Length: 281
Image (cartoon, rainbow, N blue to C red; front, side, top):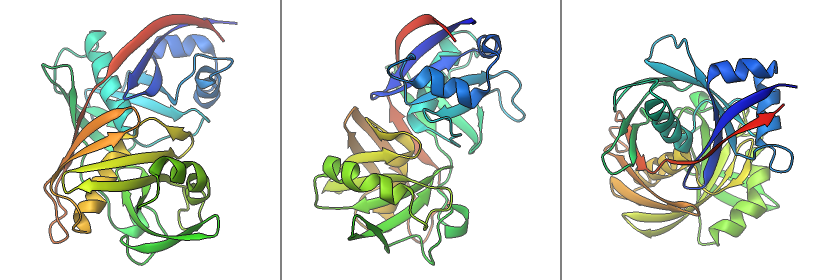
Protein backbone atom coordinates (compact mmCIF):
# COMPACT_ATOMS: atom_id res chain seq x y z
CA UNK A 1 0.00 0.00 0.00
CA UNK A 2 1.00 3.62 -0.59
CA UNK A 3 -0.17 6.82 1.05
CA UNK A 4 -0.85 9.72 -1.29
CA UNK A 5 -1.84 13.32 -0.53
CA UNK A 6 -4.77 14.78 -2.41
CA UNK A 7 -6.86 17.92 -2.66
CA UNK A 8 -10.64 17.87 -3.05
CA UNK A 9 -12.19 20.71 -5.08
CA UNK A 10 -15.58 21.54 -6.51
CA UNK A 11 -17.11 23.88 -9.05
CA UNK A 12 -20.87 24.25 -8.56
CA UNK A 13 -20.91 20.86 -6.86
CA UNK A 14 -19.13 19.13 -9.75
CA UNK A 15 -16.34 17.66 -7.60
CA UNK A 16 -12.81 16.49 -8.27
CA UNK A 17 -9.78 14.90 -6.66
CA UNK A 18 -6.58 16.74 -7.63
CA UNK A 19 -3.09 15.23 -7.42
CA UNK A 20 0.40 16.52 -8.01
CA UNK A 21 2.25 14.22 -10.39
CA UNK A 22 4.69 13.07 -7.66
CA UNK A 23 1.75 11.94 -5.52
CA UNK A 24 0.29 10.03 -8.47
CA UNK A 25 3.63 8.21 -8.98
CA UNK A 26 3.56 7.01 -5.36
CA UNK A 27 0.38 5.06 -6.08
CA UNK A 28 2.09 2.70 -8.59
CA UNK A 29 -1.31 2.44 -10.27
CA UNK A 30 -2.61 2.98 -13.78
CA UNK A 31 -4.25 6.41 -13.99
CA UNK A 32 -7.64 4.99 -14.99
CA UNK A 33 -7.64 2.48 -12.13
CA UNK A 34 -6.56 5.16 -9.68
CA UNK A 35 -9.42 7.37 -10.87
CA UNK A 36 -11.95 4.62 -10.19
CA UNK A 37 -10.41 3.99 -6.78
CA UNK A 38 -10.26 7.60 -5.60
CA UNK A 39 -13.58 8.70 -7.10
CA UNK A 40 -15.57 5.86 -5.50
CA UNK A 41 -17.98 7.54 -3.07
CA UNK A 42 -18.13 4.54 -0.75
CA UNK A 43 -14.56 3.21 -0.67
CA UNK A 44 -12.54 6.22 -1.87
CA UNK A 45 -12.54 9.99 -1.53
CA UNK A 46 -15.56 10.41 -3.79
CA UNK A 47 -15.62 12.63 -6.87
CA UNK A 48 -16.92 13.07 -10.42
CA UNK A 49 -13.39 13.03 -11.77
CA UNK A 50 -9.64 12.89 -11.13
CA UNK A 51 -7.18 15.58 -12.23
CA UNK A 52 -3.42 14.93 -12.20
CA UNK A 53 -1.02 17.79 -12.91
CA UNK A 54 1.01 17.13 -16.06
CA UNK A 55 4.53 18.40 -15.27
CA UNK A 56 5.69 18.30 -18.89
CA UNK A 57 3.00 19.74 -21.18
CA UNK A 58 3.95 20.03 -24.83
CA UNK A 59 2.59 23.44 -25.84
CA UNK A 60 1.35 25.20 -22.70
CA UNK A 61 2.49 26.55 -19.34
CA UNK A 62 0.88 23.68 -17.46
CA UNK A 63 -1.29 20.69 -18.25
CA UNK A 64 -3.45 17.94 -16.83
CA UNK A 65 -4.49 14.33 -17.11
CA UNK A 66 -8.27 14.14 -16.60
CA UNK A 67 -10.27 10.98 -15.91
CA UNK A 68 -13.97 10.49 -15.24
CA UNK A 69 -15.08 8.54 -12.18
CA UNK A 70 -15.49 5.38 -14.28
CA UNK A 71 -11.85 5.56 -15.43
CA UNK A 72 -12.62 6.86 -18.91
CA UNK A 73 -10.61 9.77 -20.32
CA UNK A 74 -12.36 13.11 -20.77
CA UNK A 75 -11.01 15.51 -23.38
CA UNK A 76 -12.28 18.52 -21.45
CA UNK A 77 -14.21 19.53 -18.32
CA UNK A 78 -15.42 23.09 -17.82
CA UNK A 79 -15.90 22.99 -14.06
CA UNK A 80 -12.70 20.99 -13.73
CA UNK A 81 -10.58 23.49 -15.64
CA UNK A 82 -11.65 26.31 -13.29
CA UNK A 83 -10.71 24.21 -10.25
CA UNK A 84 -7.44 23.14 -11.87
CA UNK A 85 -6.53 26.76 -12.64
CA UNK A 86 -7.07 27.81 -9.04
CA UNK A 87 -5.16 24.75 -7.77
CA UNK A 88 -1.96 25.26 -9.79
CA UNK A 89 -1.95 28.99 -9.00
CA UNK A 90 -2.51 28.69 -5.24
CA UNK A 91 -0.02 25.78 -5.01
CA UNK A 92 2.60 28.07 -6.58
CA UNK A 93 3.00 25.91 -9.69
CA UNK A 94 1.99 28.92 -11.82
CA UNK A 95 2.59 32.52 -10.72
CA UNK A 96 0.35 34.20 -13.33
CA UNK A 97 -3.39 34.84 -13.06
CA UNK A 98 -3.90 34.10 -16.77
CA UNK A 99 -2.10 31.16 -18.38
CA UNK A 100 -2.37 28.25 -20.80
CA UNK A 101 -3.34 24.67 -19.92
CA UNK A 102 -2.62 21.72 -22.20
CA UNK A 103 -5.70 19.46 -22.52
CA UNK A 104 -6.90 16.86 -25.00
CA UNK A 105 -9.27 19.55 -26.29
CA UNK A 106 -6.30 21.80 -27.09
CA UNK A 107 -4.79 24.74 -25.27
CA UNK A 108 -7.25 26.32 -22.82
CA UNK A 109 -6.76 29.79 -21.26
CA UNK A 110 -8.21 30.37 -17.76
CA UNK A 111 -8.09 33.74 -15.99
CA UNK A 112 -8.38 34.12 -12.20
CA UNK A 113 -10.58 37.09 -11.32
CA UNK A 114 -10.32 39.35 -8.26
CA UNK A 115 -13.72 38.19 -6.97
CA UNK A 116 -12.55 34.56 -6.78
CA UNK A 117 -14.31 33.44 -9.93
CA UNK A 118 -12.50 32.05 -12.96
CA UNK A 119 -13.15 33.02 -16.58
CA UNK A 120 -12.08 30.47 -19.17
CA UNK A 121 -11.60 30.86 -22.90
CA UNK A 122 -13.07 27.51 -23.90
CA UNK A 123 -12.03 27.81 -27.55
CA UNK A 124 -14.37 27.70 -30.52
CA UNK A 125 -17.28 25.23 -30.59
CA UNK A 126 -17.04 22.33 -33.01
CA UNK A 127 -20.17 22.10 -35.17
CA UNK A 128 -19.18 19.72 -37.98
CA UNK A 129 -20.93 16.37 -37.28
CA UNK A 130 -17.92 14.25 -38.25
CA UNK A 131 -15.69 16.14 -35.80
CA UNK A 132 -18.11 16.10 -32.83
CA UNK A 133 -18.48 13.12 -33.67
CA UNK A 134 -22.15 12.49 -34.47
CA UNK A 135 -23.66 10.33 -37.19
CA UNK A 136 -26.04 13.00 -38.52
CA UNK A 137 -26.16 15.14 -41.67
CA UNK A 138 -26.60 18.37 -39.69
CA UNK A 139 -25.69 19.09 -36.08
CA UNK A 140 -28.96 20.99 -35.53
CA UNK A 141 -32.46 19.61 -34.99
CA UNK A 142 -32.04 15.90 -35.63
CA UNK A 143 -34.06 13.13 -34.01
CA UNK A 144 -32.87 11.03 -31.08
CA UNK A 145 -34.90 8.32 -29.35
CA UNK A 146 -34.81 7.30 -25.67
CA UNK A 147 -37.23 5.06 -23.75
CA UNK A 148 -39.48 4.99 -26.80
CA UNK A 149 -39.79 8.80 -26.94
CA UNK A 150 -38.53 10.99 -29.76
CA UNK A 151 -36.65 14.24 -29.08
CA UNK A 152 -35.35 17.02 -31.30
CA UNK A 153 -31.64 17.26 -30.47
CA UNK A 154 -28.57 19.30 -31.33
CA UNK A 155 -24.92 18.26 -31.24
CA UNK A 156 -21.99 20.51 -30.30
CA UNK A 157 -18.47 19.66 -29.20
CA UNK A 158 -16.52 21.76 -26.73
CA UNK A 159 -13.60 19.37 -27.06
CA UNK A 160 -16.03 16.68 -25.88
CA UNK A 161 -19.39 15.72 -27.45
CA UNK A 162 -22.73 17.08 -26.24
CA UNK A 163 -26.31 16.26 -27.16
CA UNK A 164 -28.52 19.27 -26.35
CA UNK A 165 -32.29 18.88 -25.98
CA UNK A 166 -34.58 21.87 -25.41
CA UNK A 167 -37.69 20.68 -23.61
CA UNK A 168 -40.81 21.67 -21.66
CA UNK A 169 -40.36 18.60 -19.44
CA UNK A 170 -38.89 18.81 -15.96
CA UNK A 171 -35.21 18.83 -16.85
CA UNK A 172 -34.05 16.87 -13.79
CA UNK A 173 -36.55 14.07 -14.36
CA UNK A 174 -35.71 14.02 -18.06
CA UNK A 175 -31.98 13.71 -17.41
CA UNK A 176 -32.59 10.83 -14.99
CA UNK A 177 -34.98 8.98 -17.29
CA UNK A 178 -33.52 9.56 -20.74
CA UNK A 179 -29.86 10.49 -20.21
CA UNK A 180 -28.25 7.06 -20.17
CA UNK A 181 -29.88 5.81 -23.36
CA UNK A 182 -29.05 9.02 -25.23
CA UNK A 183 -25.45 8.84 -23.96
CA UNK A 184 -25.13 5.42 -25.59
CA UNK A 185 -27.08 6.20 -28.77
CA UNK A 186 -25.49 4.90 -32.00
CA UNK A 187 -25.65 8.48 -33.24
CA UNK A 188 -22.65 9.19 -30.99
CA UNK A 189 -19.77 6.76 -31.70
CA UNK A 190 -17.76 8.07 -28.70
CA UNK A 191 -20.88 8.35 -26.50
CA UNK A 192 -22.02 11.80 -25.43
CA UNK A 193 -22.89 14.14 -22.59
CA UNK A 194 -26.62 14.92 -22.56
CA UNK A 195 -28.16 18.27 -21.62
CA UNK A 196 -31.86 18.94 -21.05
CA UNK A 197 -32.67 22.66 -21.15
CA UNK A 198 -35.67 24.77 -20.25
CA UNK A 199 -35.54 28.31 -21.65
CA UNK A 200 -36.61 30.97 -19.12
CA UNK A 201 -35.78 33.99 -21.29
CA UNK A 202 -33.35 34.98 -24.03
CA UNK A 203 -30.69 35.48 -21.34
CA UNK A 204 -31.40 32.67 -18.86
CA UNK A 205 -31.89 28.90 -18.98
CA UNK A 206 -32.20 25.97 -16.60
CA UNK A 207 -30.03 22.94 -17.38
CA UNK A 208 -29.73 19.40 -16.03
CA UNK A 209 -27.04 17.08 -17.33
CA UNK A 210 -26.26 13.42 -17.71
CA UNK A 211 -22.47 13.34 -18.05
CA UNK A 212 -20.69 10.79 -20.16
CA UNK A 213 -18.83 8.43 -17.85
CA UNK A 214 -20.38 9.93 -14.69
CA UNK A 215 -24.18 10.01 -14.91
CA UNK A 216 -26.08 12.76 -13.11
CA UNK A 217 -23.84 15.57 -11.84
CA UNK A 218 -24.61 18.93 -10.23
CA UNK A 219 -23.01 20.92 -13.05
CA UNK A 220 -21.23 20.64 -16.38
CA UNK A 221 -19.26 23.61 -17.68
CA UNK A 222 -18.72 22.33 -21.21
CA UNK A 223 -22.40 21.35 -21.29
CA UNK A 224 -23.41 24.88 -20.34
CA UNK A 225 -21.20 26.24 -23.14
CA UNK A 226 -22.53 23.78 -25.73
CA UNK A 227 -26.14 24.45 -24.72
CA UNK A 228 -25.79 28.22 -25.10
CA UNK A 229 -24.13 27.78 -28.50
CA UNK A 230 -26.99 25.52 -29.64
CA UNK A 231 -29.55 28.01 -28.29
CA UNK A 232 -27.93 30.90 -30.15
CA UNK A 233 -27.68 28.91 -33.39
CA UNK A 234 -31.39 28.10 -33.13
CA UNK A 235 -32.27 31.75 -32.46
CA UNK A 236 -33.51 31.08 -28.92
CA UNK A 237 -30.86 32.95 -26.92
CA UNK A 238 -28.83 36.16 -26.85
CA UNK A 239 -25.02 36.18 -26.73
CA UNK A 240 -24.69 36.34 -22.93
CA UNK A 241 -26.67 33.79 -20.89
CA UNK A 242 -27.02 32.84 -17.25
CA UNK A 243 -27.11 29.05 -17.01
CA UNK A 244 -28.76 27.69 -13.86
CA UNK A 245 -27.48 24.24 -12.90
CA UNK A 246 -28.37 22.21 -9.79
CA UNK A 247 -25.08 23.30 -8.16
CA UNK A 248 -25.33 26.99 -9.06
CA UNK A 249 -25.03 29.36 -12.01
CA UNK A 250 -22.50 29.99 -14.79
CA UNK A 251 -22.29 32.96 -17.14
CA UNK A 252 -21.65 31.90 -20.75
CA UNK A 253 -20.78 34.38 -23.51
CA UNK A 254 -20.51 33.62 -27.22
CA UNK A 255 -20.51 36.26 -29.93
CA UNK A 256 -21.04 33.72 -32.70
CA UNK A 257 -24.05 33.18 -34.92
CA UNK A 258 -25.31 30.79 -37.59
CA UNK A 259 -23.46 32.85 -40.21
CA UNK A 260 -20.30 33.40 -38.18
CA UNK A 261 -19.47 30.67 -35.66
CA UNK A 262 -15.74 31.45 -35.59
CA UNK A 263 -15.66 32.80 -32.02
CA UNK A 264 -14.44 31.44 -28.69
CA UNK A 265 -16.90 30.64 -25.90
CA UNK A 266 -16.18 32.26 -22.52
CA UNK A 267 -17.33 30.68 -19.26
CA UNK A 268 -17.25 32.39 -15.85
CA UNK A 269 -17.97 30.64 -12.57
CA UNK A 270 -16.64 29.66 -9.14
CA UNK A 271 -13.96 27.16 -8.10
CA UNK A 272 -13.67 26.11 -4.47
CA UNK A 273 -11.24 24.16 -2.30
CA UNK A 274 -13.14 21.62 -0.19
CA UNK A 275 -10.43 19.87 1.83
CA UNK A 276 -7.03 18.18 1.69
CA UNK A 277 -6.23 14.72 2.91
CA UNK A 278 -4.19 11.55 2.67
CA UNK A 279 -5.41 8.14 1.56
CA UNK A 280 -3.94 4.64 1.36
CA UNK A 281 -4.26 3.01 -2.06
